[in-house]
Length: 328
Figure 1 (cartoon, rainbow, N blue to C red):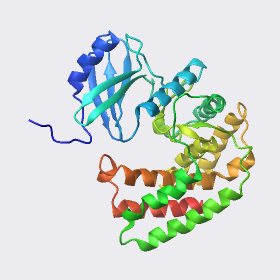
Figure 2 (tube, rainbow, N blue to C red):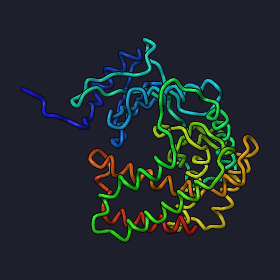
Figure 3 (cartoon, helix red, strand yellow):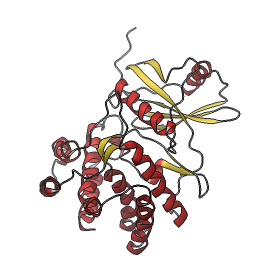
Figure 4 (cartoon, helix red, strand yellow):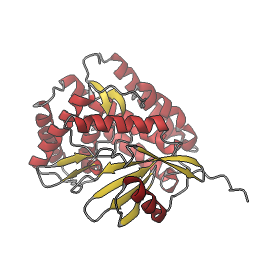
């Protein structure tokens, strides 16, 4: 009997527990799927330690892109950055290979980031994020990888996404015209900027609080570098700034508190690594690129991820959010 073609399978947690116990030569007492999303994430528990095991989709990340992520995180770890890092198995291998229904899928074991997400950070935590992000960026600006990763450019963050999302705007002509108009304006503004002195390296590109854990006020671990790619490092500062914008937009925080919080972060960052006023002035434009990049990602991954929320109502609400961002 032939197996019907499959595009996104879910590997059995029980079978994975047995397989990983053998490959890593430790006894796993619990293996649980905790995220079925762009990729699949499993919580791995032994009697003494936790890990995270991630299984990628080939449609999302190729073998070489996964190896680049592992290479980057290993470089960060070896040089003292506070990140969740890849763990080799008992045979010295980083990647695990699974012959799934849709074809080969690759998995990677990560160290567990102790602690928890904190969305309303105190002063000490804000300063810690600034210090640790700057340390990471010092390394990100000198990292040399042997495997390729995506580049974040005007083409990949604005120009191409505008084309990709057009089919989703059926019967929403005015909304699409607005995006095209703003995109044209932002592209022109960014083309006029002299970004030769902007810091450049490997961005995490999703530096929201969901992607780092605090273990008290003194220990911070960054994780989930799935979207890491080459670009201007101001992108990471922008994504952290977006966290405060969203809290203001949703009424969870006043603009005054948000600005003070971001400035505390920025002051701590600048004690480790410079960031120019010109870079900070470009936040609005890089932020628009962030919104457009993920808009395109929603469209491109509709079948396997975004179909549960990427609706006309979501699109219209996102347009309103972008309008507020451009006015912020």
